[in-house]
Structure formats: structure tokens, C-alpha cells
Image 1 (cartoon, rainbow, N blue to C red):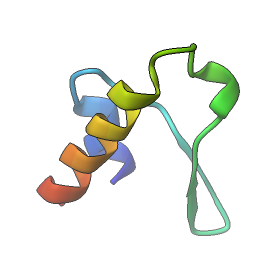
Image 2: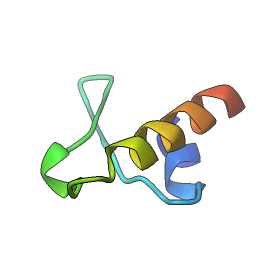
Image 3: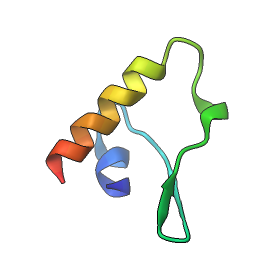
Length: 47
């Protein structure tokens, strides 16, 4: 999932900690939450 997110449009960078995909909410600007959720949903559907 992490590689699909990085390759997506827009690319989303996350890290893996103890077999868990972790997003850093500090990197999401106000108003980008819908864009982020759409990118996550698209990557999830492609897996």
C-alpha cells in the first residue's frame, strides 16, 4: 500500500512502524484532507 501511495497522484508519503502504515498529519495542510483520503481510497482499491 505504501508503494501505491507514493506512486499515486498526488503522491502520499507514509512510513511503516511495527508493520503499521503511519501517516504524519503535520504534513497535511488545511483543506488537503479530502485529497489525502481520496488518494488512500484509490491506493486501497488498487492493492
